[in-house]
Length: 125
Image 1 (cartoon, rainbow, N blue to C red):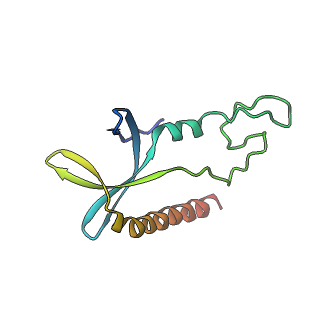
Image 2: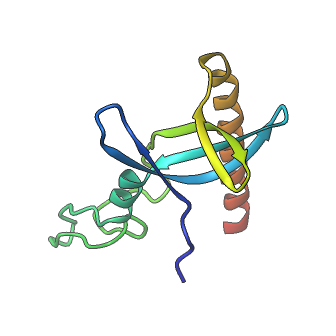
């Protein structure tokens, strides 16, 4: 069963819609923040790698268990976005964080995902 994704649509300065998926929420100094990832990048990762494998076929696998030589442990880097969440009634507004906060928030997010990876590794054992 596929889980429901929390998709947010933003419009850039050129009028182009950008879809981002909220992958995490966290609170820091009594302020809620969201971590978002570009939906298109995530969909590309889910698609087959399309490389010719050692068995001579174009791979239709999803990198995990791929016979084309991809390392399951090697993860593709994704652009993550950290935004301040402001709740007004039932509406959530996502606001870019101040440059002065970015380093500290980035460190928090890296630590959160590192801890999740450690928990996933422990579950695999």
